[in-house]
Length: 235
Image (cartoon, rainbow, N blue to C red):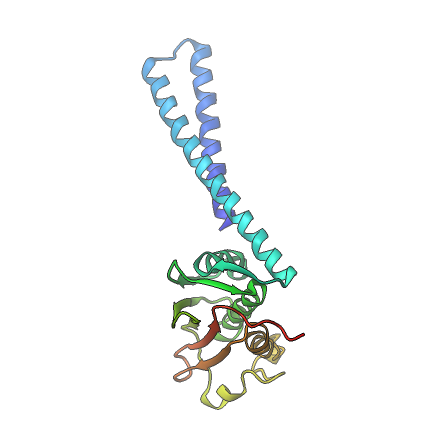
């Protein structure tokens, strides 16, 4: 996302530079016409708008990265808008599947507010994305990850992370949250990711997490039920 944004800004700047050089050459040779100047002004205006728009986008992305980084390192709780938060996390995760045909779709109402630990929730979503990339999709292959949230009532929110990958064998469903359980040990799996996730959800965020998968090849879904206001830690 950031590379694409900066690339567009550089293209706009390059076009403006070349147009300026061409105008200067026409002026030096005494061949500058009114229509040439009008064309340059139009190109300059469009290029400037393109550069400004994409630099603003880059600044927003950098700000989002900083916020996600602060959340992950501080461990503090705060009140935040869930939709904005999920967009920030998605942008920070995009580097995980760079050069791979992966889609990450966020579907969340704009009005949900949480008072909880954004660092823990960000870590949970990161683990789920990494799990899909390692277990759900073929090596260097692609697929779709979908992150959907909805308010269950005034006190709880449901967040569902689903992919359309390989799915989970029925005999493995009850074991996925156990420490050191993995079917990919030879490919770098440690079996700790989903165990850490389970502890973060249940202890830090005060919620529950379950997993569903119809059959191998049908993808899987992790369902989180979280309180809108996280419980106070025990003294």
